[in-house]
Image 1 (cartoon, rainbow, N blue to C red):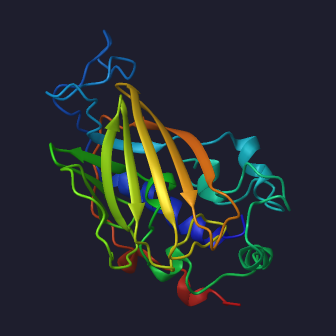
Image 2: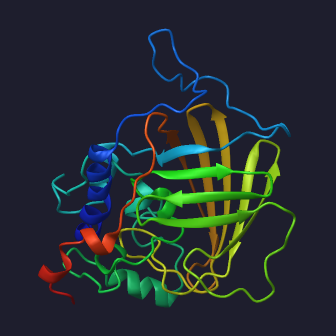
Length: 279
């Protein structure tokens, strides 16, 4: 991976966290006859009839052969840790053949400068910066939905941060303060929870590869809980300063019904930065 150290840092945190957490199955979890959580049971619904997304989730990992194709020269020894990531964590543009990525000239030039040996001081894992969007969802670490009537909160174990997704009918602010997570409002489209986010700063990282976005980024997310333990995720990125056209990715997320988030602070756990020679 072109950002090997970042991947080791971000993936490693999940294994450490899981080792410390006491197993606990949430009350109301449907069980199979052998006493295991029934992940294929019907999705729970709220009093209004919409699916209830509440719970601890994690992006489903890609196949090892698929990931190795994205890790040139790694021979599979890439420090992926215990939790295998989705390919979009490694490279948001994984669906495009090299040289065909829909990048604006300046962004394409910056992408060509990424290599196995070039490590930026602004790498999320090494600089202990917020994950931002989409890493808060695509990283191989748990995130949690807390769904209420007028607000859905997303909590991230990866960097102990949060997103507020307002569903009380408000619009985006006319002049949002640029931020790592942006300003999010949500609504239901049938059984799909649709999140529109604007107001990002221009410091965010899109993937472990090191692709960046601008302050013009707009993200549309669709979350559909198809049964108790599985969710379909679709994310569309519109950024005319970075992309020549919108980019859409689709992947699955799996419920983690027998655990919960724990506290993790990068500034306390990061041990690599002092040993890295930055380009």
